[in-house]
Every structure is written in structure tokens, then in C-alpha cells.
Amino acid sequence: MELNLKDKVAVVSGASKGIGLAVVQELTRYGARVVAGSRTTTPELAELRESGAAVVNTDLTGAEGPDRLVESAVDLHGGVDILINNVGGSEPATRFVDTTDDAWQRIFDLNLFSVMRTTRAAIPAMTDRESAAIVNISSVNARIPAPMIVHYSAAKAALTNMGRSLAEELAPSGIRVNTVSPGPVRTPLWTAEGDGFANFFASQMNTTVEDVMDRWLPEAMGISLGRVAEAHQVADLALFLASERAAAITGADYRIDGGQVKTA
Image (cartoon, rainbow, N blue to C red; front, side, top):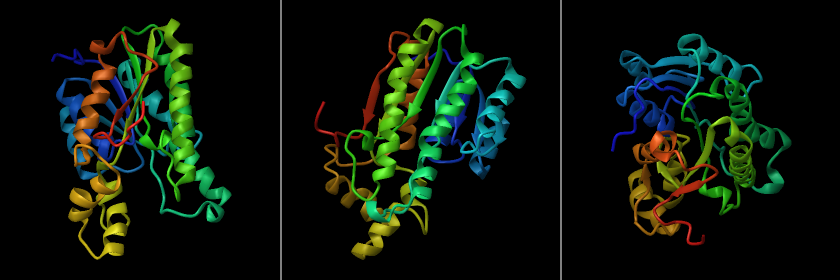
């Protein structure tokens, strides 16, 4: 399927690894002009500079970081056609009563306010562009909140709702807004040595990270397909929603969870 992404100006946040890195890889493969935002530059992201991607090292949880990312895209390419808000993440699980105000603030800064500020900065550069599109990467936790990560679930629920509201507000400006809500994905959030979630579960159950990802996690979370998603699969969905092929889709929330969520 031809997505007609060649020469589209795409801004991607949280681009150094996982889903964000996969999105940048696919966009560059399709010939888009990518501006990738990340606090750090991983070797994998640095390699994509050879394919023409620009890397902007900036902290999107701060007040100035989102403006810097969008301004870099405008300075380089004159505007923005696509915004993929991927930045996000959680922290080690804690009981609600032990989750401090600072922890709530950090999680909302990362998962909600960074997206709000980046989108707010990008809208003027996207208005009246042909086929402009915003895709927010949320989570199934917006629909199925889980204990021990109450603040993360709340932030993702707010992000999903914000996307629906923005779709209504921005439609007259020709900007589509959609949400992608993954279940567990095989990314460093789960698999990283030391602080990856799979390492925590593997140590608790005296097993391996591979066993957690390949067997225990799909079973424990009721994933119908029996496997977690891969980052490139989430990227494929995000690119479709950002493309002209999805020109009639806005205000939607697409789950990509292997059948984890059983309700509508």
C-alpha cells in the first residue's frame, strides 16, 4: 500500500528507542523528512541521520523543549505535516498511598503535558497544510487501569480524551487527530537490562526475561493472540493514520493489543 509520505515533514517525539525509533525508521524509509526529538541520541537513532533524519536533543517535559523541537522542524522544512506524539513512560510500580505528588507530576509531565505543549506548538505550523495529521501514542491502560500504576493510567486516559477533543476543534483547520493505544510491546520499557519491567517479573518468578515476554506476559494479560506486539507493528499503524490513506479518519482510538481488551 502506497502511503504517499515522501517529502512530508514529520515530527516524532520520544524517538530514541522503542516505538518512537521504529516510527522514525519507517518514516525515513518512506521518504519523509523527519525531525526526531529525544533527550538523548542512541546509536540507532544516530544512524538514521544518514537517511536524512534530523535529531533534536531536547527535554519535552520542560516548558521550552516542545517549542524547540517544533521550531527546528519549521526552520529546516518550513512547516509540519505530521506530528507523532510518542514520548511517554512509567516508573517502578508503587501503591497509590505511596505515590508522591512529585511522582504524579513527573508522570503527567511526561505523558500528558509534553504532548499538550508539543501539539500546541505545532498547530500553527500544521494549519492549512495538505493532509496534516497528529497521532498520539496512548495505552490500553487508558481503558483498563491497573493497580500500582494509577498515575500512569490516569495520564494516558487524559491523553486519549484530549485527542478526541482536539479532533473536533482542529477539524475545520484540516488537521486530523487520532490515537494509538498499544498493549504490551517488546521495547526497552519492558526488556532493558536492570530497570525493564520484564526484569522485575523475571526476578520475582526466578525465570528469564524471554520467558516473561514470550509466555508469562501474554498469559497473565489475557492476550488472545498469545504474543506481545512488536514496535514496528505499532509504527505501521501510526504511519497509516498519519497518511492520506486515513484521510476520513479522525477522533479515533485504535487498540493494538493482540486482543487483550475484551470490551468495546
